[in-house]
Length: 158
Image: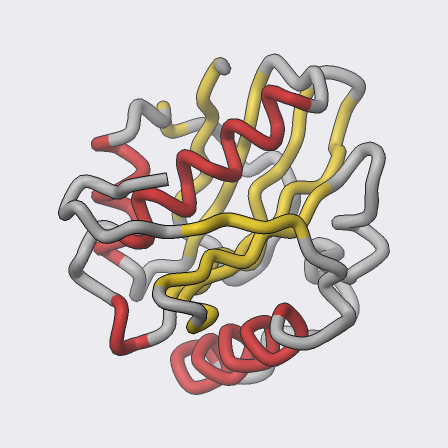
């Protein structure tokens, strides 16, 4: 898939518990821990490799020139709805449209699994993510997943 900046991204379905997906997940968690403190505590919405397992879920890793540059997953939250979780773009690939390409690839993965709607959330310090979601057609909705860190919840019909 070519993103808006013309960067070629090759998205591959991956096991979130295996490399390179597991390293990208760890980097995402480490970055969020720096922003918000420990994000992995009881009461947080689940985002485990099992949540992203087929057939209801999927985890994608995006490659550019054989380098893993982004990752994210979808998990089933209702018969017709998936939640996009753990979106991450490595710092060197940011501001080049890779996040937008990842979001679209995750939406396509949800669509391929028969979901009619995708939902997501993000924290108050991630203004760029909020802007991306609004630009991509997400509508702000009420807190659907009881995420105590999130400040934005969005939904998009597929």
